[in-house]
Length: 113
Image 1 (cartoon, rainbow, N blue to C red):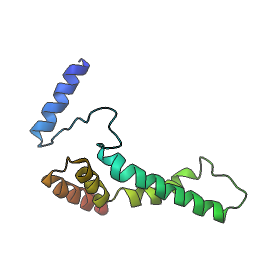
Image 2 (image 1 turned 180 degrees about the vertical axis):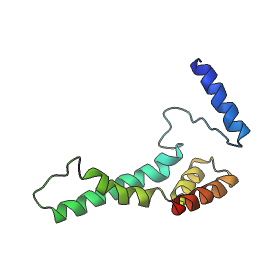
Image 3 (image 1 turned 90 degrees about the vertical axis):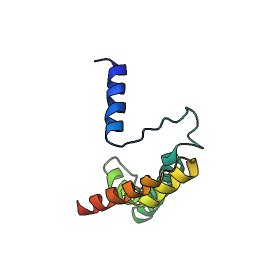
Image 4 (image 1 turned 180 degrees about the horizontal axis):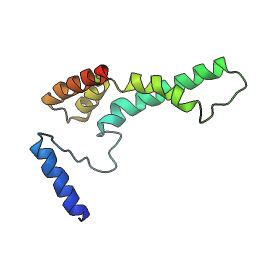
């Protein structure tokens, strides 16, 4: 199966399941990509705050690969809330009214896990 066949199969499956696929122009991440706008930037800020807090509590030590997951978790959970994701789509101008419903359902399913 070629890449084109797989792409067509993915598009067909998405359409059959009521999923709207969007393609964003290259080199527009600062203006158009919703997650860059509203999730990744706050995530970087929250992660830096976690690092700073860790360094205050571990003077003279360096963050190692063993510490990263523990430091990333609170930053990730704080940055990936549905309200941030929705605001990213709004800021990029590609907000769809059903997105709110979709994210609400997804958030409630995550809470059940």
